Length: 348
Image (cartoon, rainbow, N blue to C red; front, top):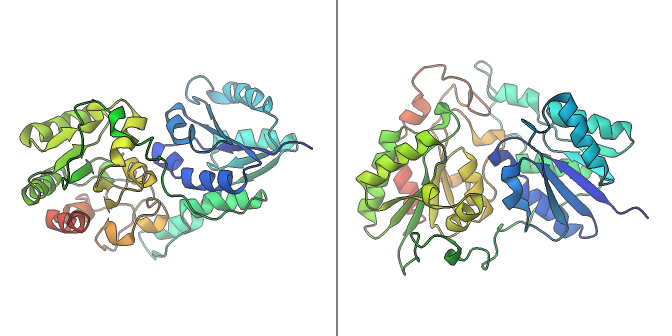
């Protein structure tokens, strides 16, 4: 009898790939007899290398090594050597569609994600907006496996075991967490300005938190050169703050540190999903986008979502569209006090 071996495809950004983790974990633990191979971009390896004994990872850089039709054909030849019995396309874009088509021609069972594009357009419409929650990304991913014959139950808790989350794996500058000392994470950036809380107001949030909690340590996360420079400016003005991303060595170490935080403050960004994967409470600030689109962090409470109702919200699923008003009022009108008050529920 042929061994069941599922290929799971999801390239895309870090947050989207992170959201596959709870679903693939459920698939792996509830069907331990099947093999699962996750195909994604190289950065995603730490999500899957210790997820379950029957989960493997294949990296594919689709922008360089496997670029274009020629590259995808080379990738397909590499994949066919694994003799997959089913393919789960969790991305449903041109590249994954092409790979899925090749497998379908070879009579491999395939299924792909439904992105509910009509409902998304209605949710973000400027007129006759339909403000109703869509199925979550987790629901959409799970539906793909159900179509392949593997219905699953959500039961994920944390990506890290206590042993894997040992702080001694981090640089000495991070130190140990003292008794009754609050560790707070702040990820002040997102991929687009329409999802990013104004930095001067974020500085006020940090100042209020350090005033309320004189022994607290605040770890700031942000990876780009511009982000690091802005974080350094905040750190230089507040000795409670640490530029965590500058001191840590990659995603694996960031996940370890996040698992020890009392609370994490993020935008609608990948850091929201990273903290969620290690069961850390997240207070998230939403501007142009909306939790109704289905991209809230795994296991997070709707009470920890900071947003204001406006007729134009949401105007975008991913936050790429420029603000129709030109002032990003959906973010600028959120007070620092509102954010701090919600964070305090996790710090008392």
